Length: 201
Image (cartoon, rainbow, N blue to C red; front, top):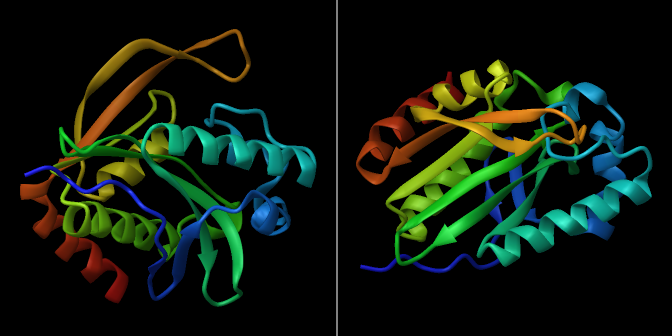
């Protein structure tokens, strides 16, 4: 059975809402949440945006890149305040192979170590496995980014290995080794139960 193609959708949670990223509509909130913050952008393949205009251009590039890879870029909107506080994407989508990758994720620092990432990933994985019919969801991150690796592992993803000298970092000088993680459809029910329990605690 071939998985479904990714289409624009809004995913509703208790703490966050994920909606298609609109570079013009979300730029002001996103810049307020994390624009220019070196630590937020440290591991992303782009320099920190220094103005709302730079962030808008970067968001437009993320939307275009996600769509060209069969995916979709989502703005992560905090339901309590109604403001966009970060983004995450589906990309590297193959309906024939029933797989996609979740990545290019960031949130404003004020939302680190909160329910935001757990619920965002729960929404994205639920949609990927249960609505789109994917058999595999993957993530990759910089080998040096231990915080991201720990966050991915907490989702229940399996660490698969390292691609050496995989990507040139945004500094244009150093090379990144990438750690790959995945979750399969058969592993999803147990992971979903654990994540739901964590959010309910």
